[in-house]
Length: 433
Image (cartoon, rainbow, N blue to C red; front, side, top):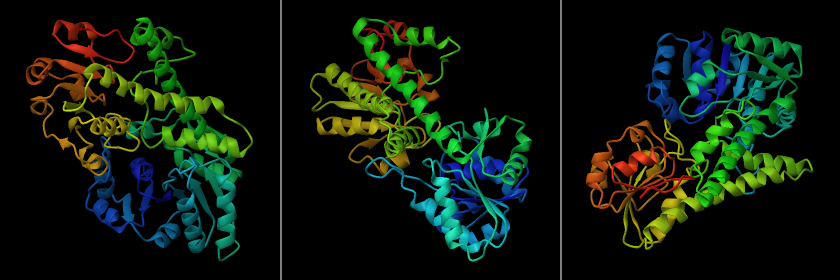
């Protein structure tokens, strides 16, 4: 099938590349000509394991191409994906101006039946607005269908998530569109859930909000464990074996971040309010997440007593491992507060430092995770990269002024850290000194 992806951000680029990988002809469109030039030169604007190789393979196989010409993309494809950004507005609702702009552009260039797919995360009833926009701006009276096809990609494992999905959700209003979407995804041989458009739109926000709720629940439990002397790792293991609960997204830490959970939880709260419902549960999820970030900062302040003049090393800047995404990374407000308190910060992340430099100023960015520790009063761990989990503890201890680690991701065994002579402080686990 011939596919057009409009938007070459995280979702659009992964979607287009993976659809090409299973044999479809895909053209990816973006109005950022510099980005298109990069992609045509096999330079990938985001870090995602395996993506560069997959892009190159499909370019060489002539199944994948990139262009800034939206007219060409619309005329080429039978199915057109809208995969543009829906950033949060100041009040927390989603900004749909990019979606509306693409819908107008598609309508302008349509000359025959098309399926227009909302791949971006959008509020319920967006599909209706896309239909209205295309009808209003289309130069001819043409048949078309709008479909909601939410993505469920996790940064760091997006290729595997797309190629091996738990389920594929398609929200449709016609059997014609449903048949075409089933044909598109047939090579995956995975469950296809067919719903109406509004249900599909809600499924995405509901999924991310539920996962954010699990994270906030685990973080709340960590506070109880700290107060009682229990161990959060043992507690979540005990409840995670319950098949009704599951182990995923029960890791206590410094709060969730990234491009999805903060934005989608906030947007779902606003969506609910617009429908006349006060989603107080999700408001509590947001409050817990914000409080957990402050709780981690409080741990740092309590440990050092006086932060002014302290030199602190930070391992990890991205909101999670295997990505360079700094959007809503929970370490950002921690660093800003530490700077205000007079601390000197030196930081290292395997992939995110270039993007971090655009956001966080007046700190030192290190080239090596060990030499940076020399002269530091302690090490703060903010992202659970494998390179940190497998770190040389003897080298850490040798380089620090004092063998002190404050671990916001619980990556080390407290008993091992005690044996190694560390003062080790983590989240929801008894401190080992």
